[in-house]
Image (tube, rainbow over all chains, first blue to last red; front, side, top):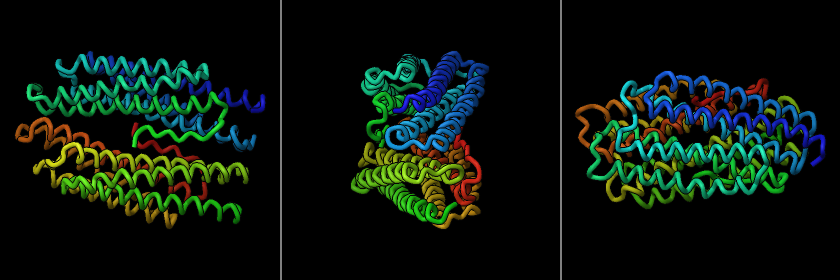
Length: 221
Length: 221
């Protein structure tokens, strides 16, 4: 990569790091609001998500401007197109935080998470936050090794998701349909959030390698 | 747009139309398998989805090659980047068809849709198919007017989704937790599928206008 292009690409990368931090904070807020049944906190997630959307547009516009002006080919071009994919994944993660927040808003003042599921969802929220923290570092430090770990880290989330269904579908489940519906949707939101982290992890590995080959990581079929 | 570029872009557009048809067929199959509790048919959706993933890569590679070789700027460049977004949306729609199919596989030989919800889900499947059919035509004919209709057409799906929760959360709901969990997830898959159609609709309006302005349609927060 040419040094001057590298400088300009680094500015795109910095915006992605800012986005990833905002996304992490959005999901932290959404999770905290969920467990505290905190209407105000849940409502703030939407505001934060609007900021994430703006950052997504900044990345889109900057990449487009860079392609127009620099006319990159090969690895340089692939890296810019990959940055667009990372930005799109982060934007969706912000959207999933809003979905978690909306479950809280919809059920307020009743807590959306039933006591039987609180432990599992706290573990899911913690797993989401750990994945996010690692993602921020991997993005900021171009750390391919750390990014590659995200794949196996996601196994924790997948196991929790499986456990969630075992609890809800067991004959002893006492919480009725409403708790199960919220549980199924919340589980899906956290699981998808983690899928996007894994997907970005693949992109970071690619970016850290200087755009050597095209990434075709599927987050899920 | 330069005429020779237009020819090359048309080839990308043709691939998107093929993808959209394959996605429509995948969701038709997934829906048919769901209502018939047909294991074989549900399993075929995965095969079809693999074809959709290949087409997604073809679009990615072709767009990248076009940018490298033609070094487009302005509207031409924006159109190519928009094609990547359409392709990504279609790929996700294929993934959602697989999710619908997996619910069938998981519950086989028991039908995943309880009798109380069959009418609603048949209406959702029909709405998804109508949206898909219109999308294929709008993409093939570069029909901005038709594409713009998709936004309001999606209201049908949103209403069905709302109705679904009313049924599942009513005190008369007789089907227990498992039916409600499957119902909540299936509802989410169909609703997301329609969201992606709407999103592509915005992109088609933009493409039909020759890439006049950057699209920033959010399918959901």
